[in-house]
Image (cartoon, rainbow, N blue to C red):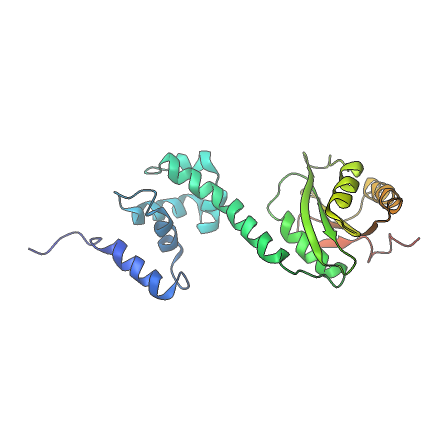
Length: 229
């Protein structure tokens, strides 16, 4: 007797399709249901994937929703909600690792584009630091400080200590204005000047300070002539 279940064999067909062609071209709900296969092995994850995208608007909206919101959707399990909520951080770690390999910067524009990517999606004002060698090759990129919007602190001693520990000769810092435009404030200019002097005393060059605005545009303080001695 023929089965009346239209989803019978669906998982295996989707696995075979992904094995043959990867995820390219798959609808978002199919990608999401595939991720849910091992987390919810005994139920129809296709229906759940549609429900999640209906609730949060898109695949990226689902991943950005967070554990607590995901858990409220009918059919979600604790493990599935936790897994999906961790995926953005996993993807960020992967991306950072790829970008760091033999990454050499030519100018402030390239540094700004890279640092802007690191600050995307952060709702609190965040200070990050790019550590470079004399050839402008990346040694590391670290989050230095996170705080509530418009109240970022510049821990100069921490930046100096990290630069020495990592063997950096050049440093570029960046922070975001999550509620405003990429315009250097008086405090931005003053703290940049003090940090530049602090690092110069130990033989390290503060190359630039990148400010990223709410519109994802960025300003280089060096290119804007704030670094003229």
